Image (cartoon, rainbow, N blue to C red; front, side, top):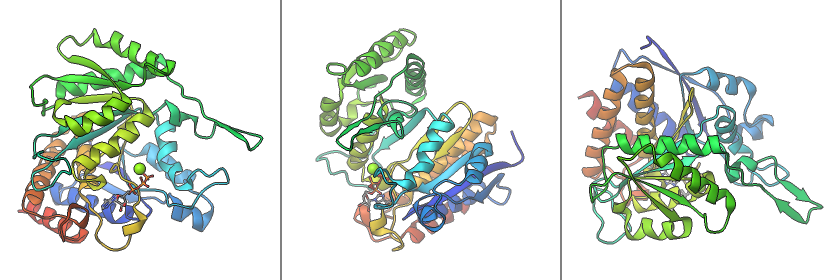
Length: 363
Ligand code: ATP
Ligand code: MG
């Protein structure tokens, strides 16, 4: 337990500053006047790149590495790219992932009461699972290392290591053991999602998964190919508990899954390694709605709650998970009471939602 936890806050681009400020306010309200978290802002992202030519200044990186946790809005803007076409504003997220070895990207997918799913006949509680995305290798680790041959042929390499697969798969089984929301049939299970029938890197992922699974006989296991998985998440989302997947597949599935529970604004995310934790909603900077005051802050608020859980577990500080639980309870109540942003077909502004959440926390 610490007297003070240093939180590095990087607002980022587009709606990033709006949703990030909302989450900071909510955390402060949940912890009250004696809040042990100190929030310090640092610049990074596409806007910063346009202003200074740097997307991720070294002092920001050092501050993030030294902080007890990192809270982020969202980064990147379309068109702000390096000569090779990759987005400059994504440096922040990608460098943090790879350089701080944030290998586990935990993305809870839950349908809350008050939120309408585009899936027919699905109601609150029917969808409650976690996508665990491998975050340190796989296809995205090729960023910067891919080759463009004579301007004619582009190559990126998908790398999977035994150590990398093992640690993410172990995390998946641990999450299944901890998970409160077991699937509808009551069976705790880990689903390994891959493309083992076509690519050897995925076949390797599957074989290591099967080896590690032997250490967790209390958890059911199954395999699903990524293409079939896209279908299953639409047709039988209630079946799943924890889904573990390679980096890119996890990225793609997360957006699909988020859509089934109300959209990108409802999808929190935690990226953790053995030393550092990085928390931001799964959505991007949504430049189409930036500055309008209508961004959905729930995903970032729920990500901040995950930050409190993670900090509390790591430091044996019970105050923090208690505050996280309150944030989730209040979020649930606000959604159920129809406090919905435009993306959820509601009329509430970011400020209105944030203010209401804070008021309820203070009550
Ligand atoms: P990235 O490449 O960073 O993942 P993206 O291009 O996939 O970004 P997002 O920024 O995630 O796109 O936005 C996709 C769509 O979802 C946009 O139309 C955006 O308006 C909407 N959206 C995303 N986040 C939110 C939010 N918090 N509130 C409301 N709408 C959102
Ligand atoms: Mg996206």
